[in-house]
Amino acid sequence: MRTIWLTGISGAGKSTIAKVYRSLYNPHLVIIDGDEIRKTINPHLGFEGDDRDRNVETAAKICKLLNDDGHLVIATISSPTDKQREKASKIIGKDKMFLVYVCCPLETAIARDPKGLYARYYKGEITNMVGIDIPFEVPDNPDLTLNTDFFDITNCTSTLRDSFHKSLIKK
Image 1: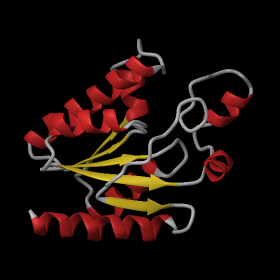
Image 2: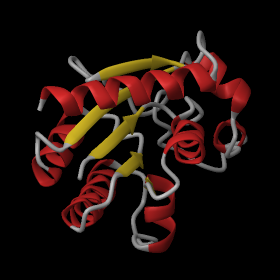
Image 3: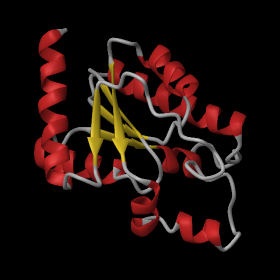
Image 4: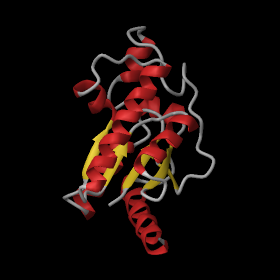
C-alpha cells in the first residue's frame, strides 16, 4: 500500500481532510497524526529542530510498517522542511509516498486555530511555531497542492481522491 503525506502549517486543514477522506472514501484507512505521535510515542521530544526531525522520522517508520502490512495511510504532520519530507520519502519509499501540500495563509490558520496552538503561542505559553518562529518550506514538487483557503474541505478531499487514484494508475 501507500502513504498520503499531508504537509502544511497548523490549522491548514490536514487532519480535517484526512478524517473526511476516511469517512467518505475509505473507512479502513489509517490516519497517523504527528501531534498524536508526539503525545503517545514521543512525549519526551520538544519542538526544536532535532526533536521535530525525530518525530517526523517516527511517523514515517510507522507509515512504512503499516504500508508493508497492506494498509493505506494518511499522515498529517507539518514536516516543515524539505529535509524532513525527503527523509520520510526515503523511509516510506519514494514510490509509496504521495506528497500533498495543504496550502493555507497564516492569517486563515490563525483564525481557525483548531488546536488552540496560535492562541497559546500569542499568550507566550509555547514557542517554536511552524510558520512563525520556524519557517515552513513550501515543497518544490508536491504530487498535489490543496488550497483550503480557496476550496472547501469536500472539494479538497475529492481532488485528493481523484489525484491519488490517478497516481496509482500511472505506477
